[in-house]
Image (tube, rainbow, N blue to C red; front, side, top):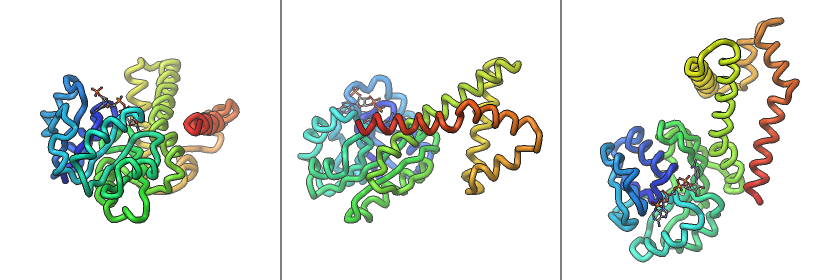
Length: 258
Ligand SMILES: NC(=O)c1ccc[n+]([C@@H]2O[C@H](COP(=O)([O-])OP(=O)(O)OC[C@H]3O[C@@H](n4cnc5c(N)ncnc54)[C@H](OP(=O)(O)O)[C@@H]3O)[C@@H](O)[C@H]2O)c1
């Protein structure tokens, strides 16, 4: 497939690298106005350009990874030269209805919410589209399945997806940082504590995804009666471990909804 990414910043670059590494057989073009910092992508076979229209007529999927206030400028530039294109937008807060109005009925609007772990083939990319674009959305779903998982969701959950999957990356990293900090308190240097904490989280996540069971079933496997794990868990819950996470996620959602 021919994939055209407009907006070569944090997310656009992560998606471009992810496609180059984990979704073989695609041609990727990525654009931004100042390309100096992303020219290294050419080593992965990605075409880097300052011209948003460069080769866009050949694109099977156009991915928008620009800021919300940049969308009108970019669409005004590309719309005169495209028709019958699938436009997958990661732009926060721009609804399918709004995007579809902007791009006209000759193009198909799809909403995606990837995260920067796309770069490592490990994003949870929520995807939403209207029923009439179901068939055209399949290529987008397949592409993002190569970059991790790609659940199809109801658009009304897009804000929740932003919090759980995009902000969620920061929440998970904060857990790893706290675990590292504790590791230093109990005797490790930070590098060793960080390596152990990160690998432990990766291992826990892989078990969940592999076995597809409730986390508590796995927790039970590592929790010996009267042992150290239950003592640690109980102390953490006494200090609001789960409830602070739930409250944080709900506060983030409240913020996004304005
Ligand atoms: N970062 C994430 O984890 C994440 C996750 C989910 C969704 N999102 C959404 O994805 C979008 C991008 O986020 P980001 O964090 O990647 O932002 P970012 O790093 O600021 O990237 C935006 C990029 O767009 C480029 N750009 C601006 N105007 C342009 C134009 N006219 N033509 C081509 N490129 C242009 C900018 O580069 P130049 O100034 O050089 O043109 C910049 O590199 C946002 O809407 C955000 O809400 C981000």
